[in-house]
Image 1 (tube, one colour):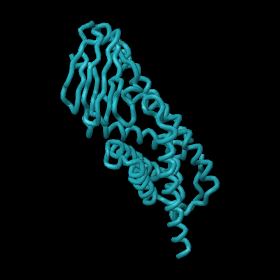
Image 2 (cartoon, chains in turn orange, yellow; image 1 turned 180 degrees about the vertical axis):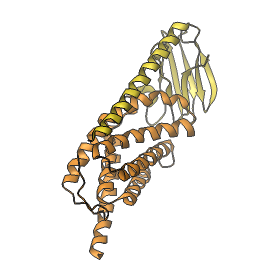
Image 3 (cartoon, rainbow over the protein chains, first blue to last red; image 1 turned 180 degrees about the horizontal axis):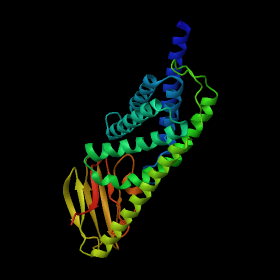
Image 4 (cartoon, rainbow over the protein chains, first blue to last red; image 1 turned 90 degrees about the vertical axis):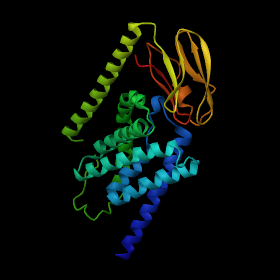
Amino acid sequence: MKNNSTKHFAYLAMLSAMAITLSLIESIYIGSFTFGIRIGLANIIALITIRILGVRDMIIVNIMRVFISTLMRGLIFGSTFWISLGGVALSSLVLILLDRLHSSLMFTSVLCSISHSVGQVLVVMFFYRQPAMMAILPYLLLGSIPMGILTGTVAGLALKRLKPMRIDQTKKPDHS
Amino acid sequence: MKKKELYILIAIAAAAVIALLVMKQINANNAASGSSVKVQITHAGEVVQEFDPSVDAVYHITGSYGTLDVEVKDGSWHVTNEDCPNHICSKTGWVSVANYQPIICLPNEVVVQIAEQ
């Protein structure tokens, strides 16, 4: 049992590190395409974490990723930080809900990426008082679908090679 | 992917496309409804400059992070010489009444948008 909890902790640390690295790589080397559409590489890690470790660890990984990646870029508690926190909060909620509903991985991924962009736009609309930002929401929604399929495919490939450690995962989940 | 989930995704995509078309239509109506359109530059919610897009000019704006210029030419306007980390405002490019999109610079809290009629 002790061995298992150590393994769990190591997985959590490794996944957090990967999420932070991917988030940094994406913001530095890839950036955003037109209308602020981004790939959302760190969402891959969120998906993998909720499938192999569970809901609580997914929340830890997501919060760590927002705090540490903005801290490393020197943007913590700036507008970037609050916007990405809003996106992560909404996408985490959607991930938890879809996990309860046992949705397929691809659908979870697409909805996660949609809710991430919706959360960001909501933060800009209500906390920065820029309701005009709503105009880019349709572009973001259309862009989120291919990006969600992309991250879902990558997460599916990774999950085929990883053993789930969730206690409640008695039956084998389908990673399609 | 399950069938039901696929339908939900298609519904979301359709809603986005419809929203885009409605926005296009509204912009086209605005373009048709007249030349007396005023464009506002706001900083932190307050209007700091109002201009007529048919008059060519350069407006110098001081934002919360730095300064930026709004250049107006041939009925279109864009943001140049901006002092901000992400340059999203200048990447928005040239916009006009017919091809309208608000230009937003979050670090500067500056918005360039058509005034409500």
